Image (cartoon, rainbow, N blue to C red; front, side, top):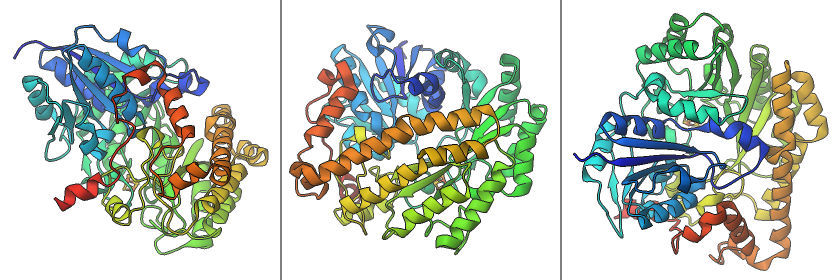
Length: 509
Ligand code: SF4
């Protein structure tokens, strides 16, 4: 095989930014798979240039002029940026590949702009692309393994690509690790709900933790497992064998059902500082929050007690909710979440607007069959800038009234003060205040309020929401253009549109 000049780009940001929070945190959101692909390409003997794009780099300058093959890893919100980059690198003679969540959710769209679109990606898939490395146009080639890889290169092997990424993070430097793939739970909206749970090799994890203890005085590790601690004893044994108690700080996403008091004690002893459990709904998904059939106010009380108990062991907790699920109706779900904000004041609630990401989850077929999916460009599909599923039980103005009311309540000065009082330690307090007054809190109140205003005052805007028109309102077009900055001119023709029912059509063929 000829030696290739390979570029690997991890798109953490969806366009250029100057935001302070992005400067501090974006490099900490680097994904693992682009680092894995860069490692595999190098191990296959190719020259690799790796860039984690945090919104501050000039991507065109950072990659060599004469790159042969460019891999781009992207979430759907960065798809338009990925499409523009592909167009630009193709114009310079490169062959382009997209992988990551967007490629998995929208392969039918991505093939229009890339030579290869990756599904499940293991080393054999990467070798196939490296060997073929040829143009597939106008329609790209989909390449996928049958399942997730059984093993991944650990931190030691990926270090060459982790280190320069962490250099971009000025204060907090979080190393991405992963102990498992998939999830045994079946939350209907989740991309991991259809992927069998599979633990990764504990020996690699132990090696990596020992390695990090040589690199940092006190490492900070962010676990990228979709649901950390499913095989709780195995992973905790590995941590305890590799590192002295409380010598590494850890952050993980885990479901409440896994966070019993004995587990929390052990997590605390081993340095866990922040947990991000999903609560999602007061009426649904009782398994993952260990609330079984308990619903409504009873579930609020039970979950609040649980969250307060977690806070007695952990300095930081973010609780995630999905707004607009079909099980929600009327004001009650929003009022219940407000009660939760009162009863568990130390938690930072993260809200996501219900979104259907292409073929991420079988539930999306139902939305597509019912013609409820809106054609918002990918750039807005980040769980808050747009909700691309028409709510089942709300009109749009009604829904946004409830969302604004809840967000205002959650990020009011009163709630910010209560949160500060309930948190222990300077860093959690500081984090929560910054998050509440920045784009995540105040910024969202402003944004949702503007959307709500336009639903009343802008006829074309409302028609788009009601599925009476597919013409993108100027408001979103202006935002998209601003987001992409100078790369807007490289966006291929038609790349702002996609077929909202592509998944349904693909299963009917
Ligand atoms: S528990 Fe979390 S990772 Fe697992 S299916 Fe539900 S949302 Fe997805």
